[in-house]
Image (cartoon, rainbow, N blue to C red):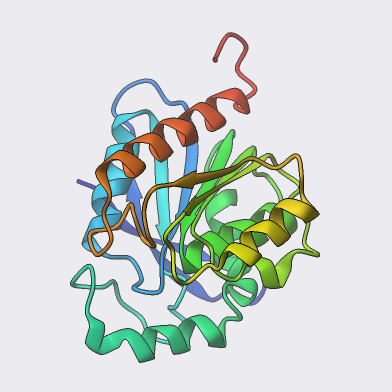
Length: 226
């Protein structure tokens, strides 16, 4: 079980809440997990605990705190879709909350990695381009990445996308690939949110996690890690 901590923005001193999961054994690095439009859900707290078991000290910042404080009580509530999408739009799909991401990065000892889902997948892309101190980034089904293709990742980045994702058209995927031909784009036989409870696809979730852990390991700066 983790704890709730506060992160202070260097921009204006605003304090964001975050879920923190610490490691109990050998530490592989720090990990910033960026949430989908639903916020810091019970699922993400469990995911943070899972990565902590793998050796990562995890922070999950509540990126919508400037708009509405508090963690989500449920993983998925269709009745809140319009409100949560509105939050994402108001933050320009993560561009305006990178101060919270940077605060989380700065709160962790290196090497520090980042991963994000949906809204957080786009935020992860922006963090790879605009934040400092990241060793590697994994973005999961970030639907607005195509709108930020001018923001080139400055840290090694991989993308995880679903072949049947109705929110990310094939044309957008091809545009990303054309702009960044050397960037790994992994496609899965799944739809949107294949790691989350509302769209879970077991094989895709398992394989994307393995690839993410391998990506982090390769870019950890620790000699001998594969």
